[in-house]
Amino acid sequence: MARALRTTPLLHLDVAHRGRVRRLGLKLEEHGPTGSVKDRSAVGLLRALHEEQPLIPGTVVVESTSGNLGLALARLLPSIGCVFVAVVDLKTPHATRAVLADLGARVIVVDEPDGQGGYLLSRLRTVRELCDRNPGYRWPNQYENWASPDIHRRTTGPEITEQAGPDLGAVYIPVSTGGTLAGISAHLREHRPDVAAVAVDVRGSLAVAGSAGFRLIPGIGASRPSVFLNGPHSYDRAVHVDDIEAIAVCRILAEDAGLVLGGSSGCAVRALLTDQDNGRADDRLAVCLAADGGGKYRDTLYSDDWATEQGIVKEITAAVEQLRREGLFFDRKHQEH
Image (cartoon, rainbow, N blue to C red; front, side, top):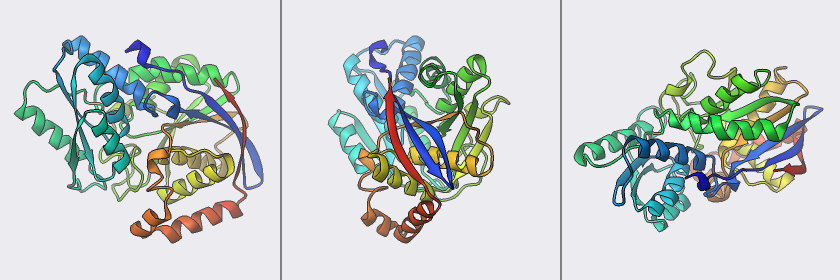
């Protein structure tokens, strides 16, 4: 498990918007073993599961996932002789489902909406039913297991502060389970209390307050509040972004800097721009956690055919044009390892 972790790079850019240029760092988690920040979460969760009761060969592990944690678990579990059951939903990209199956996972696709703008509650019900019918199944439970925040407190947070250096002013962290945010924030509280931990959520999500509604982007937001973010020091502030605008930011990043990132990364950058517009961002370096790459979203977030199917192609085009009129432009600088 220790060897499964890999340091990911910090990419420096300049971002121009509304006549102002500021420095931006993107923490590129796509350089992890399976291409997302969930590689770290998977290590922490499996370590905790093994310490509770050894994961002997033949053990079946089941988890609800929007995709990325599933890919990480599907990579790690066969190496110790265990079997993985991934409970996904219709928003999980087909490319992700195919890779899960190729890695030997059993994939269960939930198609019943949960009434809160997503499928999370339906996925969790499916996991509980599987565990009830199969008492030997093991469930890491990324939504309530504090091993998830702890691995980010010990790895992701220290990497960001070391790579960004003393001029770091804020870290923008997309929220789904809340584990990544809680862990990074805990590290900042202890070692860099001058740095703001900003929770980034999407409208229609209940992960960080808000109200339930339809959501387009997988890997960010949730149909219930995060259990990891109840404390008074869980984060400094929260920014809720529009998913259409986040997709537009992703497309502009790809055009300007050649970076194809996941939708939650676009949310994080959009949140930074919102803070800047509202006078809540200073001149210090801001780091956005880019939780995964965008390769598996080429047929969705980056596809006009998909946008047409969703009935949002005009909205995305209008959002891109509006951001360009506001002067949004990314200039790629250099990469720090």
